[in-house]
Structures are given as C-alpha cells and as structure tokens.
Image (cartoon, rainbow, N blue to C red; front, top):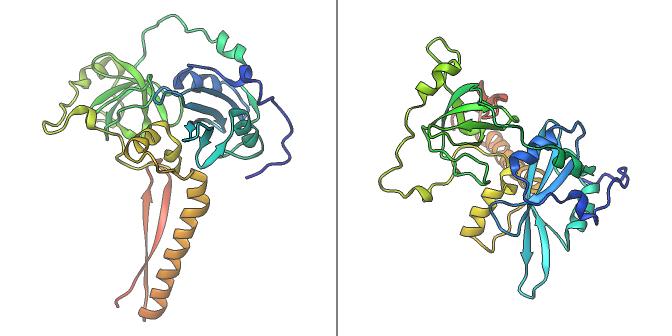
Length: 305
C-alpha cells in the first residue's frame, strides 16, 4: 500500500545510520521496543543464513523481523528480496518501504546508532522466575539467542519481552528466547502459577528424543502459524533447503490476493450447493478461540441432500 503523504525522513543511502551489523534478535527487539513511534527500524545480519539480512521494525506494540535474501543470479547480478519484491540494492528497498506499508507501518526513521552504543549490557543479576510453561511443539530456533526445546519440555519464564517472544531457562540452565504460541502455562492444583521457589522442582529432565529419529531432523513446523511465517528466517531457510528454486509469496500477497480469491471461490461453491440441493436449512452456532486467544463465533448451515 502506497503512502504518498510520507515525506523524506531519512537517507536510505546512509548505511551507517541504519545498518547495525551483528546485533541479535533479542537486542534489536529490546532497543526498538524502547521507541514510542511506529516505523522506527534497523537492519542487522541474519544469524542463520550467511549473507542475508533482517529488517527489524517497530510496528504498533511489537517488533517485526523481516528476512532480506541476498540473491545472486547466474550472470552475477546481485538483488535483494523481501517477500516477493526484488530490489537492485538496499537503498532501493528502504526507499520503497518508506512509501509503502510493511504490515501496519512504512519505514519512518532508523534507530539512532547512539541508542545501541549506550545500551551496554547490565551487570549480571539473578533471574527472577515469573512462571513455568510446558512445550506443546518442538522448536529448533533460528537465531543464536533462541532457546531450542522439545515437545513436553518444561521451561522457566524469566522475562516477558514482547507479546509473542519470552525469555526462558531450561533445566540445564541455558537461557534464550522462546515463541509464546509454542508453550502453555503450568498451573498448580489451585489454578495459579507455581511460586518461583517451587518452579525449579517442577522442571524435571527434558524428554528424550524418539529412538527412531535423530534430534537434528526435528523442525518447528508443527501447530498453527500466521501468514507472516513466510517472511520468517527459519521458515525461509527450511524452504531454501527443500526447494531452492521456489519463490515464496509475501504475506501481503497471501492475505490480500490468494486468500480472498480462495474464500470467494469456496463461498460461491457453498452458496450454489445450498441453492440447488437444500430444501430446508438448519442454522447452528459454535464458539472457538484461536491460538492467539481471539474468540470467534461460527454460523453453520446444516441440510440433508
């Protein structure tokens, strides 16, 4: 979506203003969450795919991390790809998204480099345990600061960094970021989280890997995922391994084009079926909750053909 009303707010050719090198995902998230303005961004190196980059953007109350693939064609031409958009260089990419929305905002200005230099690591302090969670799915991690875990493993949450990513510690003492939709809270018999003093006793040993499968063969492609998954580093890394020549559509293409077309086709088919086959229809309702705890009410039409 173009936004011609946005003025020139930064110089995309000034790499020193927006490139933050080897900054980790957790560090980028923390720095950008300290900003109050949507559209503040930075570019960092990808930790999983050497030569690729990640565009980190403050969007409303969260930080989004968009993978930027460094593509070299057979004739040696270099391009930069984000979603299904190709650009000749990084300044062209940043200039485009200065005038077009990524998800909820265009790029407004880079994070001041002085903020990163001033954010020196605090002295080590004991982590306070907030609550205990158990893994619903395997998670192998995509960044160096992620905490891999197996289904059934118990983890101690020590910081709720953002809505979808928390910091946790496992039974071996390793600390890292975990995706919130992949875990669920563990409550004591009274229905409240275990006190921090008792959480360690509830950890137990991590589950053993299945005997017929090597641990490195596990992926975290289980469960439910948003359209934004197609622009996540780990998912693109897996697809690049399986289908090197396949080009993923962007989440904007999926949400704005592919899904609406599929919905319309399915809707027309169901409407035609009801009009031609149903003499009488019984309507019922049902409630459900998504993985992000969004509630829905479904209207279901029943008929006998």
